[in-house]
Length: 265
Figure 1: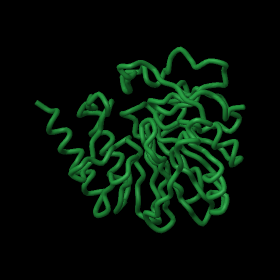
Figure 2: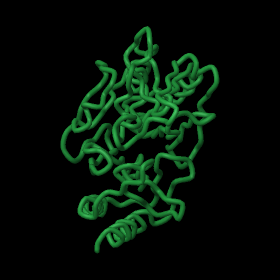
Figure 3: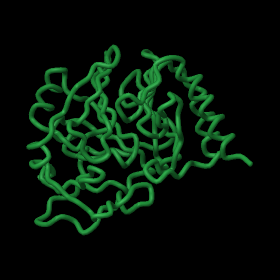
Figure 4: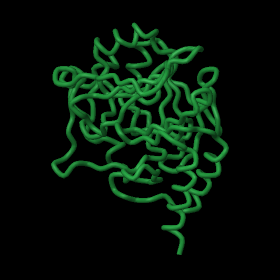
């Protein structure tokens, strides 16, 4: 069963079912992540569910954030978008328990799952199988998939519409396939950490967030050019409280300029 594969306790990614934990986590050994000083740690879906639960928070019309408490692994939140054309889950969590399944079923299920980048792949295969829906990953990041699934679909190019009225844009940078989700009707952007909201309510653009390695100015300027074509008032990034709720598109444009100034001699 996909649901029984070991979970990396540092990044939350699930590996194929095995009798013993994997020797390595490819995600953590990449320079964008890290292996803890005490070494690689592993857990199982059962152990995770025994000590954790998922909480749901209403953020805006049609938008719910789902978070695991206490915090597990990277600590990202997933988002449920409830649209006239179906429900979409943006990014994933490692914990998928019965309560989460029942709540989401009560809200109409999940019609599509889209991942912003590999750090949030978590247990995406189990989510796709549980809700019998496609799971979309950008083709540029397909080599980071640890657990094959018939639900998994790779999309290519710069833009993709997983459901009518929703647009996913590949910006690259953090990962080659790193993407954002634009909901034009709600004038909002979900950024994962393709761009991450900072404590001063602007945005940062990093190749590695935990290791503080910035993206170069040329790359960020190109990302900014792509983002300038989108209109959005609010921006919700991967972590609770890391959001911009007013004039977000203007703030992001200013953030691009700030980043490029800091890295340009």
